[in-house]
Length: 399
Ligand SMILES: Cc1ncc(COP(=O)(O)O)c(C=O)c1O
Image 1 (spheres, protein in one colour):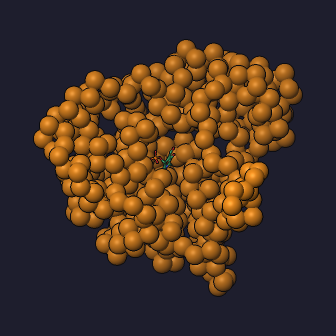
Image 2: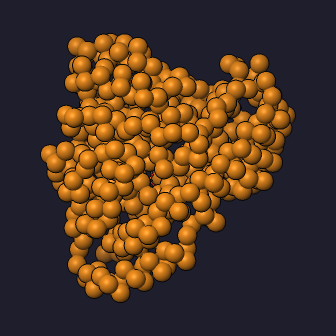
């Protein structure tokens, strides 16, 4: 019998599922919210040529479902890159390719947590991870940070506080290099201290290193993974930041037993073989020249943002000067409310995320993450002046 009217799913939805998907897209004239690369830096011609070469050679293999761990030659390239750039000794069999590193993060959260478990993060944390942790019912606890990264005493205290509670601490999730959203890089001393403290408490470290290649100044700091001899560090990386998020390619490195669990929960096969072929062929010839070009463009934009912040905010705010990555963290005086004017600023053409969106505890409304990756340097410069004007006009500067 035909039904009339529109069928309603309202009573059928999972209670844990958010009502709408997160999908920001650059719509503001001055968009500092989105963490996208500059479309002009995507090496389109090189990717097209590489795809053609790879398809001529291996295109018939698209008739088969790919290896669940992803294209072997790309995993070998990842293992080689991690040895060269991050001092990591990794067997390609212990690398699993994923549809962006967000899939890896989701798979690992699924493999390692149950509702009610605790995961430690930095004081402010990448929104995507925060959402996934909440989605799985995890109790997320932010650990205090300063410009050198996680504060060891705070970590020790947090872990001591949690000891003996019902909730098991499953891991510490950290973005130690060009942290999202804070922009700093954790010092070597801090990394060693964090590794030691978590070791004392038997807690694994989940190292999200997706920005590490975007260094335009200063020296690399050793990865957590390279300092761990016990298989206690799980590592994820991404090609979104050095190529393009639209390619959807990331990876995870973990002990085999963790990878097996993570893979067993993944629906469908590995990530797109089509993407994997193009990426592997392109990067094996062009990785470092492309990264150098991209980083030069980012440095110019970072400088434009810092110059404009100095001119427009002067001593009424504080911010950091990142040596790489995509983010500057703006701090206005206590009392400033960047959450309250965010929608209005967007309506007036300036987009940002306020600090509370990255905080497990919802604090930080006087802060904002400003991303300089997507707009041109000129737009970055003008946009910061406009941000200061809009905040001032709506009485949001605090102080
Ligand atoms: C810290 C961090 N990890 C992971 C991701 C996910 O990136 P993707 O899934 O595109 O690899 C992002 C994206 O912005 C990020 O900032």
